[in-house]
Figure 1 (cartoon, chains in turn green, yellow):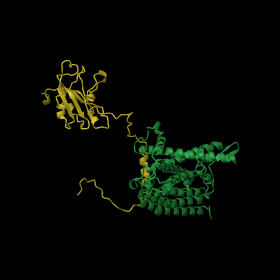
Figure 2 (cartoon, rainbow over the protein chains, first blue to last red):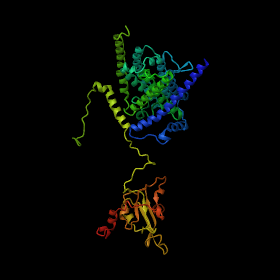
Figure 3 (cartoon, helix red, strand yellow):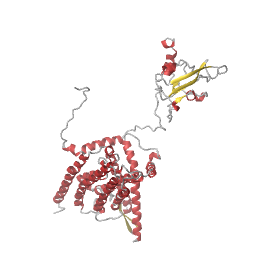
Figure 4 (cartoon, rainbow over the protein chains, first blue to last red):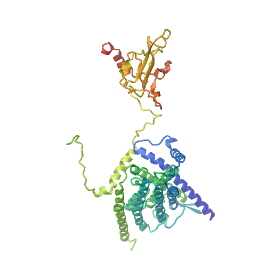
Amino acid sequence: MLAVLIYKLILVFAILGISLVVAMYSTYAERKVAAFMQDRLGPNRAGPFGLLQPLADGVKMFMKEEIIPSVSNQTLFIIGPCIAMTTSLMTSAVIPWSSDLSINGTSYPLQVTDVNIGILYLFGVVSIGVYGIMIGGWASNNKFSLLGALRASSQMISYEIAMGLAIIALVMMTGTLSLREIVEQQPGGHWNILYQPIGFIIFIVCAFAECNRTPFDLAECETELVGGYHTEYSSMKLGFYLFAEYVNMFISSAIISTLYFGGYNFPFMHELGLSPNMLALLGGLVFFAKIFFFIFFFMWIRWTIPRFRYDQLMNLGWKGLLPIALGNIALTGLVMWLTGKIN
Amino acid sequence: MQLSGKSIVVSKKEMSFLEKLYLPAILGGLRITLKHLFRKKATINYPEEKRPFSPIYRGMHVLKRDEHGAERCTACGLCAVSCPAEAISMEAAERKPGEEKSFREEKYAAVYEINMLRCIFCGLCEEACPKEAIFLTDRITPSDFQRNSFVYGKDKLVEPVDADKRVDVTKRQSTAVLDFKTNTKLAHNK
């Protein structure tokens, strides 16, 4: 019992550490990708290739003066970024990072907890994430913050519906809500994307909206709202909001790879004849390669397309994605009935 | 009326189904940005890498000395007269016996000032100078915090005496320039 507890604690801290480091270097990657796509070089002064830039930025964030506006609701003002950061880190608990390691006959699952309602847990935590932005925007007592918060919350609530419906089609196919079982059902190259392409497109569009990433970053639309919901924030509280966004990006990339791209599965993995431990290690690396590709994809999209207008955003969510998601559910059901999986 | 013939009539037609999906347009955009990812970058890493100057670049001025180290300027004032920005001012003085080493001719500039904020780096002073004394170089006027510090006196303008610290202006003294300045057939040299 104690051994299990210690193992889980180590795993939790390792995953937290990895999430934070990946988020830290995502800020660096974002700037580099942006620069390269605009024919520039990007940060290259701090350390070789500018690799110490995230550290410098972090130190800068900590050193900045911490300002709490006198007209703000101070408790909520502090709680806001805490919620944003906590919820974004909490989601990593149910993601299966790789298949089980077995050392001296005991097997160590590389997943913090395999709850049988993993997807529901994810949705629950992500929904709480809206409160971080909403509370922060409300507590600032600033009209721009409030508008940003309003936009963020209505956008996230609208897109959660389409996202949920896209997942329902997937859950109908897999018959389980546990993320590990979903991954195990996609051995080798039989990834869910082959069976659920429409669901995948809806899911990834909604994931962009949930992460408040371009083209759906209306919550922090600089041209209209100064800084959006974090206009009044400074120092590390601002850092928490920005950081939470990058952690969210990392986690959504992980979820996309888990649900639609086979998680730690890769083609011909069972034909290689590797030992289970080697396979777990290789699987983990492949999983991270998939995650990094999707993080890059997030950035690639950001530096390609401009922001949606607010009415276009709502039109796309309610009149575009929602009917398509419903149609996708019907289509999935029909195909399953025709192929005899349900009767 | 059309002025340029380039105007395009805007059509507000309904978007087709494919256009409404946005996806083909987004994929097209992704292709373009991916191409840019591998393109040659336009950035020049300034302190390590410097943009090459043109040989006739007109930067900060220098007041030349002759081969023996004597100042060439005789304070004739032609540069100040030719200056369209009125950036140059000077005070002339007479050479005393024993100063032959420092000043080439009997008259010299006791004070010679160029206001670098007024200067437009046109190079007319250089063209007007009959004594080959003032040249524009490929050095850049350094930035500063005070206006007064941009009025450059002789301490900053006259080149050092040491032969190895002289400012090289051979690029600007091309044969064509020298010929232009010395050819007696040209009206300005008569």
